[in-house]
Length: 125
Image (tube, one colour):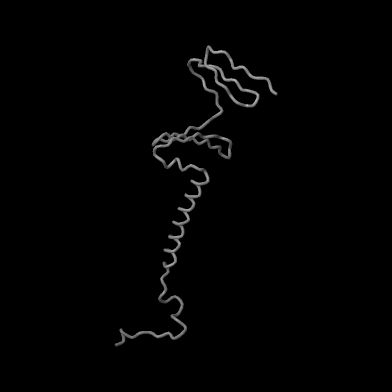
């Protein structure tokens, strides 16, 4: 009956290192990390008010400026997403002049198609 013998430890419990599962705490860490990731995603979508990105019928445009000063324009039209990087390099090529853009004193830019009269700007009051 030596194989069936049970150990009795009294009120002190088992000795350290015995009957302890070393991976018992790992499962709890996994659950906590999944909950944290879901909460972070919800917070980011709420912060940027970009819940329209999840709607398949919506169209949204975001302008993002990076820390180095470069800009990205993210456009979503229904189910397609397009990212454009804005650069300060000059472009050249052939094309047709479409019109002229004027900047008003308040900073607003007005586009006037080719052949039309420029806008009249009322005097400041």
